[in-house]
Image 1 (cartoon, rainbow, N blue to C red):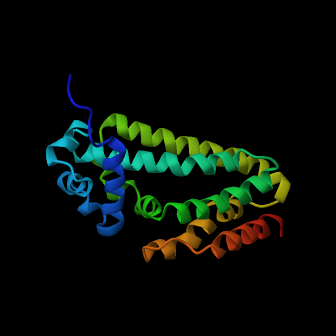
Image 2: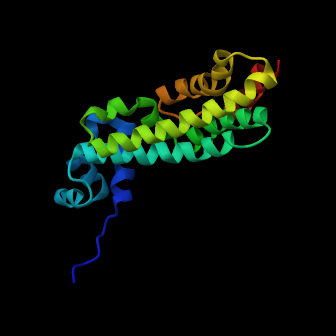
Image 3: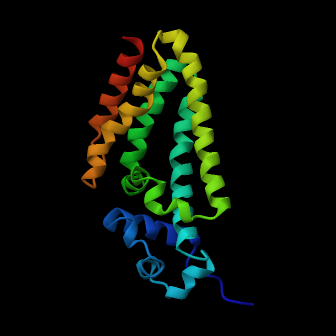
Length: 193
């Protein structure tokens, strides 16, 4: 019977996120991640067959972690409150997970999505489809309730929270607490006038 592994897949993924936040995607190499964990460089290959698999795994874990709270917020009623909460959730999540937020902000292309396996690309597409479906569902509810166009609703639901966190992520910092209130108030104003 072999020894239990000293380092989990999540240990390696956490290290990859930290390295990405500090150095960008180019710094996330197999050996750099193993060093960050304090593991022999060969041990990472027991969890991930190569760099594309590691980058796909860190993207998918981060994306699904973000989407969980956002999708839960979008599914609430009434629809206006759901949209306001979803917009605020973007900022809350970025505040709680600034390194992961920087990774999402960088996008899957920064993590070499074209080199991922077909299975990993399909998992990313499925996650994006879940998000698109949830947004479309809430837009259908909001249009008659608010009298706003799809473009106006997307501004409130997607563009506004993204813009509110972007400049902070560019500087490598979490958005300040007041950003949650600002996004909440502005989203509600955009939706209800």
